[in-house]
Image (cartoon, rainbow, N blue to C red; front, top):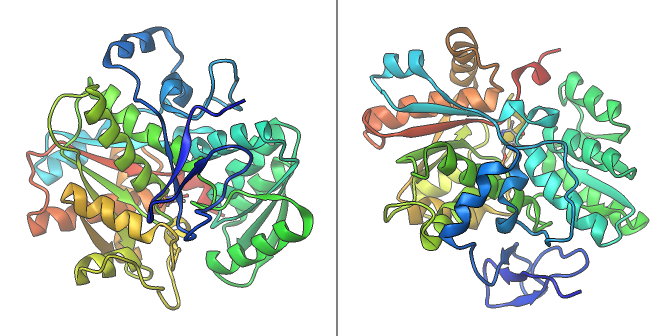
Length: 384
Ligand SMILES: *Cc1c(COP(=O)(O)O)cnc(C)c1O
């Protein structure tokens, strides 16, 4: 059957038919973006009312045909929590935390893997592999188990024990690699070449980002089809930031939201691994490999993201920015979110609050802005 969407290269003019298991642009090696012939009409917004609160309520925006059922564990539909106490401390009245820790498997990675596994199974994939700093591996393990397929996960030695335990709980084979996620990526690709397993690595697999788009769609719906002024997001590989950028642009174009501009997108990274921040500050249009990446925020320990250039475009086009925060600051704010807002944030989630403080000081974000911080994962997964 002819797919209803095509692949369009994020860096060159190439486009391609989207069947089987596409990876990266066959002409230049950059990530593919999915292109649909048309966005859902604004009038179809009303159809959402009766649907369950999972990310698949936006199925017209997603790579799925009318006659297909997604591989789902109820991902998405996470709360947008008004952060009143922290907001008051910062002099802000419209500060929200999108709490992605409430997804199946405890992180927003569930969204991308639900979309990727849905397509891969249709394409006849029989086993999976992924390089991961942790949470993507847990999510893949769960979604692969859902369809009765094997998953092998390549993750750095030193990944928090709870995260490893969760992968094993869902039946994945865990391979510990002495190195960072880039080293895991090489091992995973080798394994895929040897065994025929399908590698769902960040942005080497184009459907994960489609799942991440629903972060943006959901925030818009939860704000009554209005967009926030700014989004503060902890970026590693970049799927969340890029997915939201694509979503906000599409929502505006389709007339689903009022207004003329997309939210300013701010990337927060650890000062121990900040390739995006470094590129933004130097005005570069691509990221450079970060030597010796060090941070306790495992999701942010991505020294050479494949989506670097795309993140920089998302940030520049929306008038956003990037800040690096030390691990101690993210841990302090992680604790604060738990103590005063009842949100058991991951270190990455804490990083967004620490980053917001810097953005307020810089005047990049104003206290009157409507701001959404992303708690991308659950704090308990990181504690031993
Ligand atoms: C993977 C991960 C991130 C970074 O993800 P992106 O690909 O940059 O969107 C941030 N936080 C957590 C908890 C993660 O697991």
